[in-house]
Length: 253
Image 1 (cartoon, rainbow, N blue to C red):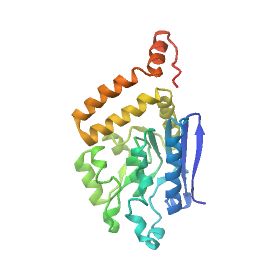
Image 2: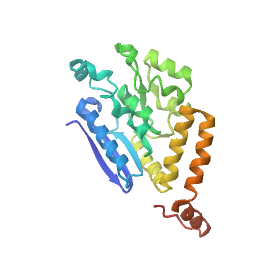
Image 3: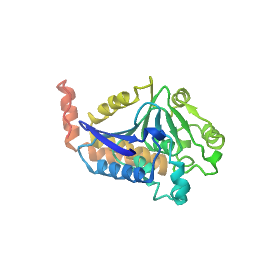
Image 4: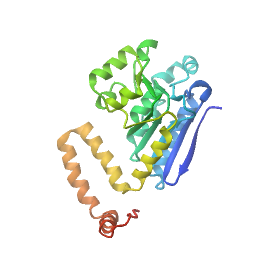
């Protein structure tokens, strides 16, 4: 049965793409469910980090179910119908893609949209659009070149070749490279470290980096001073400094 399942590990939400028979390919209902669960997590103050992974060890997601796309051709390029794959980049809650095996097409888009990528040794990324007559959309042209060198992005998008985990880590696309079967555990460790920190600061860092990307250095510099002034008056700042001086773990709100 194909679905998106969820589980809460303290303040870390794990979303699992469940369609192993088809390498965790997305049906249209699964895409909509992904969007619903991401938005619900964003609205839940108890969720401090989101981990997205694929069921089993052979695939994160192979992308859209192509038979479904042939039946409903408009699903392939409609920005609203594909919006859930881009949601992680727009959330204030940090997101981690725990990539096990294939991350192709829409699976690649989802990995690009996440803030971080933790890759198992068998992870593999591909943008096959040029090979099947479809333009690589959803950030593959607009976002990917900000994550890896433009020449490599161009290469991937027009050859459709696979980028293996070791290359992804070497060029900085993958934040962690771990043994096959260990991506979820490593992602949870990273997520818990994030969740233990001030959520206000964590969210502000993401917003600041997005400001840099979209508005440039001067706007990002203004953001630093304005947001820094705001956050230094918040309870988390008092708690963090007191905890440091008292040599104890902080207890952030």
